[in-house]
Amino acid sequence: MYATANKKMLNMLILDILREYTDEEHPLTQQEVLKLLKMNYGMECDRRSIKNNVDYLKDLGCDISTEKGYRLMSREFDDSELRILIDSVLFSKSISSRQAKDLIKKIRSLASKHFNAKVSHVCNLPDINRTINKQAMYSLDTINDAIAEKKKISFIYNSVGTDFKLHPRRDSVYIVNPYQIVANNGKFYLIGNYDKYDNVAHFRIDRMTDVRMLSDSVKKMKDIPELKDGLNLPKHMAEHIYMFSGKSVAVKMRTTEDMMSELVDWFGTDFRIIEKNGDKITVRISCNENAIRYWALQYGPYVEILSPESLRSQLSEDVKAMYEKYC
Image (cartoon, rainbow, N blue to C red; front, side, top):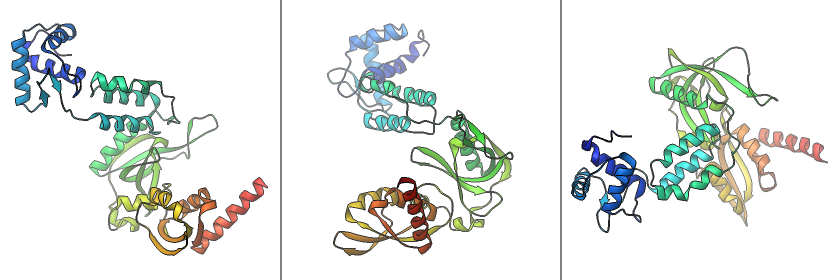
């Protein structure tokens, strides 16, 4: 809170009141502004001071309307943008429930009380399946710093045990060259290179603990075959839909036109329709082989993998194994 006895801060106090209590549809009269100044900040002044300070704020570029009362017409984020930010936090699985509530509170502080009244139900939403790793946000911070400074990182990589707690996968730490943080299916992943090898690897950030930035510089991307031309992020994400590591392969599959929405949702528009026969289509997609295997099992009744033969054979074995379990 501002120092309430300092009238040099009056313009900022008025701006705070307009941010909290007004929007395009809800103005305040001069008298209401005076009352709020006294009630919230213990500040007393006259109508002339209100007008002069509002004019000063307008000169500074604040979008304030003085027609039929005072109202702040625009702010850093409009209501729809704030709603998007809140929803992004709500459905992120990479942050804890407490962190989600704190972030939403901060986002709501950017809006008027009228917007907050419309989203008051948010605090009553049930928790989704959030991460159990309380270090996740701190890990993100450290990884961001390491990427910016082009430094390697070390961390412990964990799996979830039957006690629903994180347990190290091995005794020694991972040494990784970090290149990019991405969000996929509500989780944050690190795209990097495990220092011992020359391939691209993906790591779930909410599975990482004790993340530390090292003094060693990262391995250059050009020294990694998959990244010799740099990281084309849209292409990389389209080819790694489940964030499996490994090379991408050319996949040919047969499906129906009804599956076009799902294909675009998963692979973007960077695939080719190479044949149409009635409502049947044959498409060619470049994708990580492990990822397309699980995707094909997910959409099993609606797609048929035609090539590569190794993938088709693997799916045949998967289907036989599933049949034995259920029949």
